[in-house]
Length: 156
Length: 296
Ligand SMILES: Cc1cc2nc3c(=O)[nH]c(=O)nc-3n(C[C@H](O)[C@H](O)[C@H](O)COP(=O)(O)OP(=O)(O)OC[C@H]3O[C@@H](n4cnc5c(N)ncnc54)[C@H](O)[C@@H]3O)c2cc1C
Ligand code: FES
Image 1 (cartoon, each protein chain N blue to C red):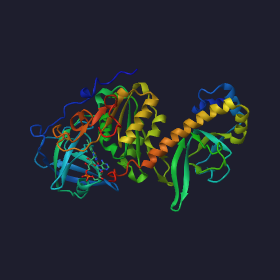
Image 2: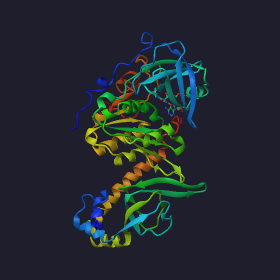
Image 3: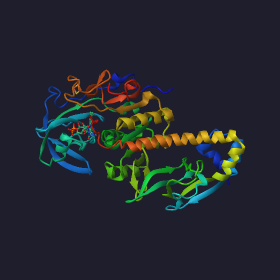
Image 4: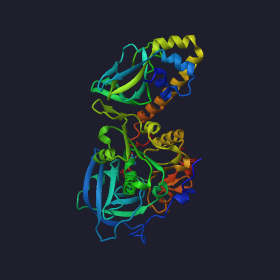
């Protein structure tokens, strides 16, 4: 059976990360599986972890008057969740598995403590999260543009 | 570095196949509407047949026709049918304004004026031997469908063929049945994503460019064809470059307002080119200095 460290190393999030850091992170990781339809977390709940998706697909949903709207799907090789990083550590969306989803769950409280103890590792992890955040921000901006909608003439 | 497939944009442009009216490219010929199919709430496909016994309509994938709705106006619309069926001319159009809305009201038996085909084509011959990644957004799937038909007719000549298609919502998926059929092909990789969806949709939600990072192709031996809103194409190029696809192997189709379609009136100017005759399909590295810049 693959060790958690091995599984962690297979995920693009840890690519190029020093092996001593991977070892430390593995100490905060558990292997998890979600069946299709299973809610992984709900808006407002305490955000005490994040997930490295290994297989499957997860929908991020927000509830509107007309029902839940999927704002993004996350799949293999993606990172799910960063609310564990920023106070007040609460999820901003619901996350629901659309198909059987395998992931590594990383305990945020455990990791925050280890990052405080080892700022160099903390900086490394933050750099990686910033990349993920930047990509999501760009994607969200494009989504907001409604680029397939009508090209309105510029207001005079 | 990968080898450029073609020397420059001029080389990428092949003279338009002006048959059957090469002698009079400004003169619309009558075509009769055979069939009208509603594709999505604002998009429809018309199938046309020559009303004056013109020869079969030969064209290349990526080229367009000028369609004249009698008494209303004339607009450029890509040819999106199967080139192996040159007797039927197929156009998919999104109703956005005066002419396209009038076109939506056409019924079988009505007559349209057709000039064309015009413009450059997707370099499907030159792409042979490589993986091909097609990135389409919204109505942009229409001009790429012809390229896909061509490549599927000669499937063995290509490596992987990957279609990445993004649209607004699940109800806006163009050629839905056909896309589902393509997905079931074992030798075609099809990924669809929408910008927004309800919780009944089980597919991807997110911009089409986010599919590029995970799509299965070999960046060092890949040719990419992109068609969609310009902002989408800009981000698609960036993602392809991040994956290591050379700018010289990326082609995209540009849109500008048109009048003459034969390089005379200057309406469709884009940098030093006229889109109607040097485009609409361009190699990215050639147009890069002008691409995404405010009106050039
Ligand atoms: C080479 C080429 C190939 C094309 N192929 C296709 C095709 O296969 N299918 C297709 O549907 N269209 C295609 N187009 C775009 C099409 O030509 C325009 O949508 C059309 O000219 C609009 O004419 P209209 O009279 O209906 O709209 P107008 O009355 O001129 O415009 C009305 C409103 O629609 C907006 N508008 C205009 N064009 C577009 C557009 N492209 N997208 C969104 N909003 C727009 C205008 O800003 C305006 O607000 C192509 C364009 C080019 C240059
Ligand atoms: S439309 Fe007249 S030059 Fe292109």
